[in-house]
Image (cartoon, rainbow, N blue to C red; front, side, top):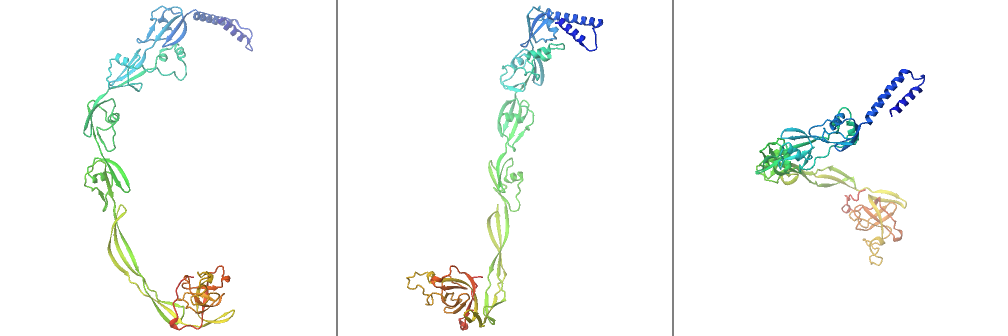
Length: 518
């Protein structure tokens, strides 16, 4: 192998550009290098084969050393007294010999306020603690690498996985078997044991006393371990963050659960207060004005009591009742008929009432009339109506007609067939006045137009008020037609002219109804 290396080196040098033959000095140097390589190769390959096994990881080596100890020293394998080596370090090394090394595991024990560090071959926490003279009591807590364990006799967890370089055990061992030391990288990962001593604690929970053992560091965690539920209003002495000590006494003063119903909502709270008023004050709920509570503020409370806060307000209501005024109609001979003048406007009377109303939680509970007075007296209205008759002439298609009154009226149409009687009825087609229904006979309200009054209706012609109808009220006229001439639809306003002669004043209705309205 060395000879091949020398030959290759010579060939590369001879091929370098700008160079001639190898000089005498360089040749002698290469010879020296070649000799050293040959001596090294001979030393290595003439050494004895050795199998070195450290914690189950084997590496094949060759060594000129004659003893186990010499081989370990050669590869910087530094042992501790707790490590186990087979064969013993002083044993002679035989060809093909296997050297087995079982390294002790680093262990740190935190117990009773002190830290103990050991190297050990023991495989369980119980053995390690026993070897250190540490006794576990039944209620003590043991943690292995931060994880609580219930049985100290279970084997310790295996060492941590390989480092991030993903080397296997043999690869790490080879890396360690170099000048500079092997044990730092090959020794098992350390394990940490923590012993929490259980201490006795006496608990007084609202008068009920008990004793328990715990390994928790403070009051809060110890109570949580016991499965106790604490409410915000409960008082714990010492405080939840206080550190535990053997024989410590913990007192819990329980709060009382109370429901407060106020302003449309229910507040669930707990308290140490003894009266309703004190509970409301603790909750920041004020009784203002006439507010009160059920039960009353001075009453003692019990568990799960419901306290209702009643908000009280009073309101003053002013109501008014109207007194209608009367209308006095006064005839005026200087005014033409169907004209009116308001001489006095009139005024509605007003009676006012002041009432006090009490509300509890926005619900009315009572009302009381405190005062009633006449705020305004009614004042009579006076209207003058015209009685002066003026005869006028109207030019029509059939010649002039004289009339003494013009009345705006709603015009509709009817015939005998629509009057509500069957054709075989003995009164079929007979009007209220006894005239036969048909064209020229109209139905009116007799209080507006007396029966048998002569009329003129534009687009209809002369007519006689000869009939009435249940729907013909006020200023309305129903125009009569033959059955075969009845318009499909008719409803409109027209001026109806009342023809001369005018009746005597005592037969005239000077003030007509105001319906229907245009």
